[in-house]
Length: 308
Image (cartoon, rainbow, N blue to C red; front, side, top):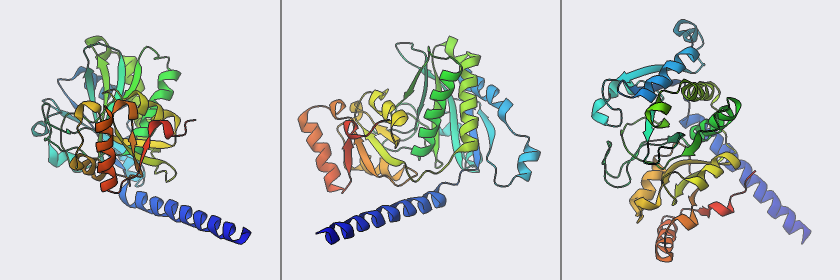
């Protein structure tokens, strides 16, 4: 009996080791981000504020050119709104490894927020992009940025701002991994130099320190409201990193939405994360489980994630 148990444990350890090695190699192959582009609209006060603050963290192009393996970032300012693909110079964007869209955020409540999210549309494309299509995004970059924003918000006593992950929404649609970073939600916050400094410092630090962590589990989120309170906790207090989020208002779910979210996640997705109470009634919950089972995709509830 002891021999059988020992052999079983060895098999488990070997399988775990192989998984870690495989994920490490996959990350090295897929995610070598060195050239970043910070894009904003000239019409966007928050975007201009963030890029202005980021200029103090930009390395001298001559010096960074001598450091071949060092990460660097450039700026791109569009004359029009950046959520519309037709307003963007795609030829310029395609020269970079990763795109960061700096932008304002609007909300009916007018809350002070710093938020991040992947761009894309699960249903109709009412604000840029393309119907049923989302951009590529990195769960690891989002997690590390979220953690760094939380750290700097505390360090610089910006506690009247709420840090939040938003679900995947609006355009543009580009063929480069990207993320939106936004300050909300009124003219006062868009022009807040301290808030923009915190965002800029966080971005520059993550750009310089971004690492491919094979020990993080990668997930796509389904359910919950637009501002993802349960997924916020997962990002900050667990080993799980989240890329795309399909909110409750985008349901009912279909197979193409799940495939799109999985395929447009830069890392290999380990499982789908379900905000169980934020999915809807029992019929919709079962429909989602049936789709995931049909596609042979693992899933967990947010309550099943171990938090620090």
